[in-house]
Length: 143
Ligand code: ZN
Ligand code: MN
Image 1: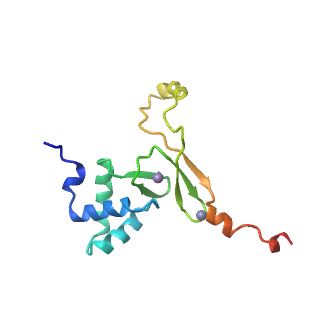
Image 2 (image 1 turned 90 degrees about the horizontal axis):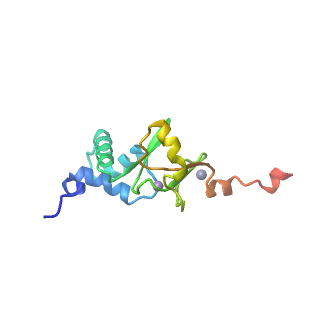
Image 3 (image 1 turned 30 degrees about the vertical axis):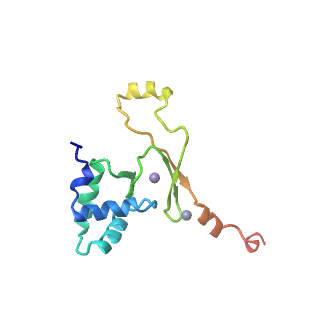
């Protein structure tokens, strides 16, 4: 018999939350997920979305990108890829870095800290292409 997958016993509410994340590559916040999921599942509460996110995270179906004091964002992909965050518009883009793994050279530092690392993720901060284009210096600025 095939083992039951965590997604098999999802309620319709939880399924709607998961679908919103899986259909988007924008790395949505809990608030944005709530807005989209409640459009599909009228009556869905923010608390349910919040609890569902924590359940989906524990089940390994979605991954949380913790951003310090900013709201976390949720990723449908395993976090073994990097992110570039635009400091102007907040956009979070995926970066497929070829060599993102627990480097051999890190083993000594990890041993000393006693830390059991699970995954490496890299976050770059700057300006996305769109924001660079909008705010490119114009001829007027130069004058
Ligand atoms: Zn931007
Ligand atoms: Mn991502």
